[in-house]
Length: 353
Ligand code: CS2
Ligand code: MN
Image (cartoon, rainbow, N blue to C red; front, top):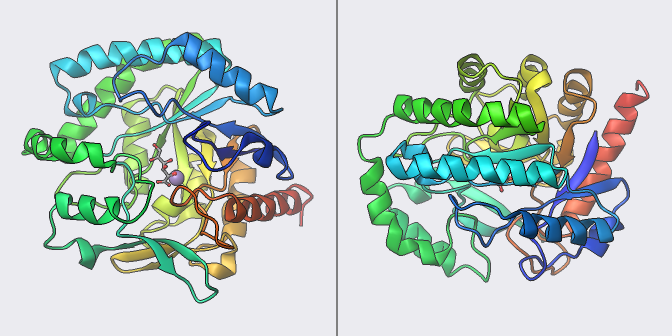
């Protein structure tokens, strides 16, 4: 197991590499080139510079999150074909700087979605929350405006500059079914997995967050059945999973330890965070099992037993503590506490507790 933290890069992250380096047991960071729009090639020089910056801080950069997939690829249109060729070049460039795993997601239009970026918890910290009732009857633009007024940082995919594109994107997805999306995901993976095999780079798809359709857009990576379909449709071992417990775990219909035991060999990256789940609602919590609805011990035990021994892991999101201001979910303090807790669980499991 390799404990890592997501890092958005100098100027885009309130957390520094030196701070991350001082978290016990963290060996690397999971960065990305966030300024490049989905569909563009990730230039080798940019990746070399990023790798050199990370290595100079004494950290590794062997997992990238995310080389985002453009909506044109998700829609399976002609522009998407060009973007797939660009994605292949990006994979080659990532391999050239030592990347072993690439995380991505196939959610239409948006990345992860929340309805409250600073929900107060009883201990005085704040967390991210999703309330399906809050979304009912609202347009994406309404939610966009609310969220973009909620602070200096927007969620990925929810940046204010995207608001003007939303109407055209929703029109493009009109009539696109879950099966259409599955066909386009299979086409994408069929096109890139031969290059992944050649370069030794594994793909690790992140689940839908939340794990159900929103705004009437199809979502196809929310359940165990979705993973079964994915691995049967594209059998290459370069087709793998980013097992995000906070995303799958927001749905009480998902049995996470059982899913990890079933798909473990194909889990190359794991996001280990906890949520308090209720029907059509979840809020993020501290990582402790006792803080939320998930049994983090059973999850870590299943990962230890069934995932590759080298699996990359990160504490994913944390609450906002002690007056910190940071990207929503990506403050330093609670992710450091989460990493320490998770390292403790892994040590106890590895030593056979
Ligand atoms: C987060 C996302 O939704 C989540 O749990 O970890 O940032 C996720 O990493 C991206 O959607 C992956 O592409
Ligand atoms: Mn995640």
